[in-house]
Image 1 (cartoon, rainbow over the protein chains, first blue to last red):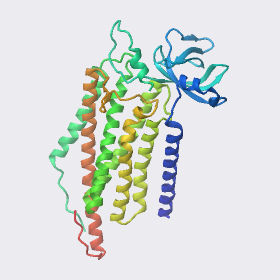
Image 2: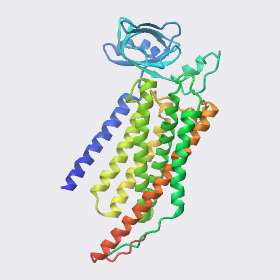
Image 3: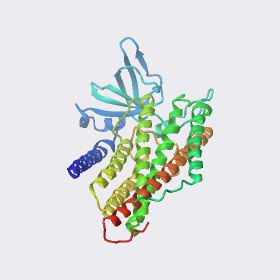
Image 4: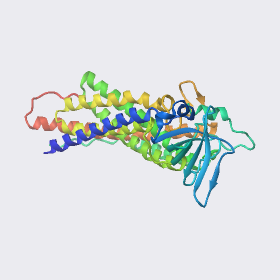
Length: 142
Length: 241
């Protein structure tokens, strides 16, 4: 009896390990696509839920705090697309930060229902009056 | 039949005290001494706990797998005991890595969990470590039990380089390494780096203490089993410890 319970647990673990590997291979190797990759083959992503990753273009962020509508442009410096997101911006959302948006394109606008932040691996205390290193931020997308 | 009481060495209590003290100092450094981050503000303080525990989980898997290889080599029960102790601590630290990561991830990345390569490989590591104990429960014969569990631990160890480099090799939501041992340099402020490394040492000391305690318990278990075999009029086989 004890042996059967362990056998069932073992099958469960193997099944979940297989499931995780399958997720890792199918979904995770390309966790998001870049705006320029979408531009190269837009037909491939028609009517499909995709993750689009890029940098928030400076000077394009607009937030309507009554309707909770956030609009900005996402870029990989080769291609830029407008994004419309319903909801409040996350705490670390700002210009020149990496983001990954989940949703689909509708008439050239990416309509997102999930906005994730992909911040850089630079950790430092705040300094006064120092401009952000845009090139370093773009590198984090590769 | 009773076992001779084993005397608890004084240095073990010193080790335990040092482990708790250094974790407390590490928490103080992270919470009080570290400057806030330019982007994350005070959220950076969670990083010290998350990264140090994650690194030590890799160390624990390494100990478990290497002891497992040694057991495959010679079949000495002591190596299996060390391997199990390593695997248990690896499971603990792996679970803490995921819990700390989720805590850190929600306010910074805006999600508790996502199936990117780094997170998926970490989930796989924890699942396989849990699997070690399920498989061990299935097998009664100590030599076979030790061999099978050693093989699973070697598989877990083999997945670690992929996990370590996941954020560099694949596009992930998980941030890339700020301390890039593969040539990318260090992109973390000096004070923050010192505090992080201190916390790694503290988490490591705690791991060493847990490991030693668990090995002591494991060796007692081996002793008891050996005596039970003798009492049953077993094969008379000498159990080398």
